[in-house]
Image 1 (cartoon, helix red, strand yellow):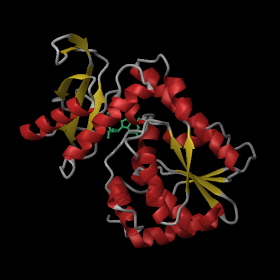
Image 2 (spheres, rainbow, N blue to C red; image 1 turned 60 degrees about the vertical axis):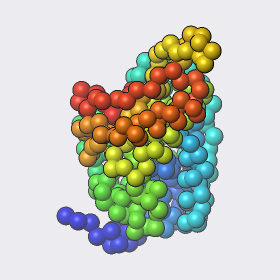
Image 3 (tube, protein in one colour; image 1 turned 180 degrees about the horizontal axis):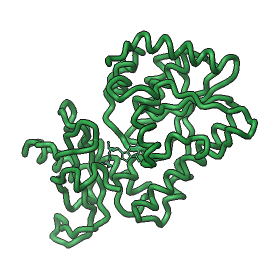
Length: 313
Ligand code: XMP
């Protein structure tokens, strides 16, 4: 059944107002469509009694923290950017195993987030849980729904802390429609999926500020060149291998390998490689070689999901 977006917004704003009352709330904004919608609903329901934080984990795409801040400023919503880059990069030190990297990200995220929630003195946490998150949490695929436990707050401790999940009945297409109704620009309402662990999911081997800077440039080039395509996701990946290349002077040297990943998909459960034109592939290759001088190999990833995944960790 199609959701009546205007009625949905009215009802949820009313509900947030009723639940939060005169207390204060906090929303952690990532710039994704779910947390953005919840942040605007929370703002409409509580106004200045809601604090909005954006955790800068150092794993965002080019200019992302500034862009998100400015989009919300235009809606009259102040976003506090919390610089947690060092905590994340410290946690990644020495790790190359994909699962260990994911765990380091998750543990650090919940620690940073928990600290911010406690420091804010807020009584309510607004969370962008959507319908598939609840289904996947029940199946044990995700832990997202048990957020209080993750951030170390016991809801039964008498601390009186509550979670508000205004969009938990919605699926993604409806969240995007509600985003439009709320006046969020296409940069948010039509935002391409981006993983929670950010660019670390596109960086094989160790995650360091230097290696993230390389993959950030590759992602920017691929996104810019693929803009307007119907691909579900488009990005660059830094591989862990150090393939041999050759300098202009003819000397052998080791360098970086970048994979270009563009996939067509509906819900990210299945995916096929996008048929990118040869001319476009050559243009992306030329830009990657020019703008990232350490690169000695550029590859196009041809694998569907399954057996591959969309991301690399
Ligand atoms: P995979 O790589 O498993 O990804 O085929 C499926 C979809 O989910 C995104 N993705 C994530 N999103 N946290 C997220 O919020 C994560 O840890 C995560 N890992 C993957 C991915 O970008 C794709 O859209």
